[in-house]
Image (cartoon, rainbow, N blue to C red; front, side, top):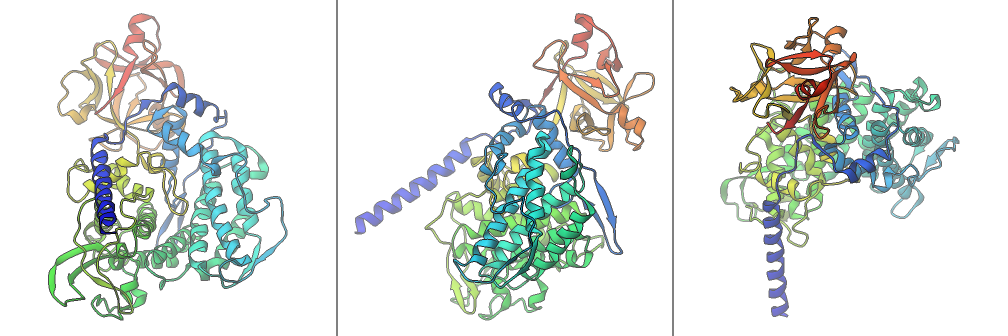
Length: 607
């Protein structure tokens, strides 16, 4: 028996080491707009329609804050980035979308737990495990995930079947008239509200090509009534650790859809410190309420005392629920990351220690709260599951129960819920040392190991597809391969040995005048885009938000005139005119022939 146990330990250690070695060996996930393979492009082409959906960003002003729609974890800019790059066959979006489109819930005939053609009101009865009510709320959460997936499929492909399914599921579930007391209701209802709200916020702010599938004022009323009915199930602050995060997800999503600033502020506080449990933050009291807390402060806990020995120890930040298993801590990270990203989209900042909504000069967003505590937790969790040792201080779980060490039985798990955090620090904060900094490298290794990471039933996976931002590129001249498009005194031209290098770096974003087009934003002068002036000269000008400017800063990206593996860029309002260089200066001109074609062809290369 001892021999068997020894062999098991050796095998576990070997698997963990092998997993870590593999994660280090795999190159970082690509972020360049490289061309998809013919096989990937063929699969995408088989799904696309000629209709290109468009979502309109709207702002709703209340007395205390302004809500952005869509704005529950995804914005118009994010949606347009996905749509634009998938339709253009750009990586990594193209391959990630092919994977996304292969899910069962991405089918045009997905499994739906309700009949969307039924319109009769219905009730969800109460009950324990195995009862009708128990299965009803589980089905509701599954259908909410399906509605979200179908909405994303519609926005990329333009196929109205997907929109029909998404809006049909929402319209059927809002027919529920009452809901009883059900086992684990706080979990399933919170997840359903979150995913349904994402879909509803997108559908409400976009138009269908088929009138019956358009969102109406009646839909808004009915969905708001549904959120109100479910409120007693998700609007809670006392549930255990990861479940607390789920409740915060449901609360913030509902608040954004309903433009409810008061509920929104409550959701933010519950995600940061959960003050409703009281001000006693004594983690060393066996009956301290915050020991079971799922907030950022309570769950990703800073400890300075061993509750078993009473000894003072060096301060240690740890994910408490790792003492239970390795699965539930990822749900904590996923839930709190979802709240953090939604609040970031809404422009929310909080007091850096109290976690309350704040406009003070020292206020921070939820990602940066408590000195990037959420990141610290994710990095700690992935470090352990990549096979590395971590310090874990024995601590109270709740009511005197103690966890003394992380569990090892399911060690090695890596979950797609880490995608939000990885993408925030890589693309928004633009941390160049993600792979080497001790505070981020384990998160980076873990994300790379599971790239492209895939779906998460309850939270947000598919980070490669959803959260990869527009790539930073250089435009390399086709016929003068040592020269790159750059700005000099804001005039666009081509040069070799560009200095500073950022003068030749641009971010490809959705077209300013139409999301089906492309615009080029300067990296070192954000807010300035390549734009064509009335005399045909190309300059790096400030976006003044006029229709004229947006038209002149938007381009069609087509196969290169001189090399189809590269690109040429037509003016959005005049497809006969291309960006080209002449005597090293950039213009938008019409023309033909080998010289013109070469001048108007560029390669998109790494920055």
